[in-house]
Image (cartoon, rainbow, N blue to C red; front, side, top):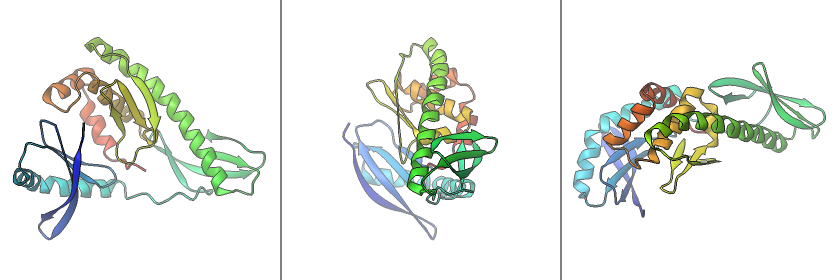
Length: 240
């Protein structure tokens, strides 16, 4: 599906809010405030630009409130230096990085610390690779485990088993292709388990209904009755 987009600015009182307008062959208009403070408006090509502007203006208060909410819960992350004392998040809990000198080995989680051992004078590039490898391995294990759990429920509603892949994404926790492939953001392993399950179930339901219609949310509710509570928690986490 080809999508065209343009950058726009919304005036809300004395506040200017930038947003990106996407136009494509879709049925309904949708506004998304992503965890990295980006506002995305998805609109059908058939709708006139003035109608889109009116719709966005009506939601201006909600958009501003959502942006403020995200900022309050999680300020934009700073770039990691990969030195002892830095905080890393895994399954919703914070852990301190502890770099030790010695023979290089895989990172290990012990208590509230993530230990990394290196023989290269605490080189940050090496430490970064060790930490990212640890995250990748744990993301793969975690996502596979909870994907199987979610699919066991979803299969009762006539949903086929998906193909699962993992990669880094800047704006989304997960995505689903029409071909039946679910892609999960590797950084999803930072959020609590019940939020991971929500993202997986959300994308699995898209295998059957590839939009955000009432039918989709009805299916999601049947598969995961408490998805709203899980989503509310997830919205407090920043993509980083």
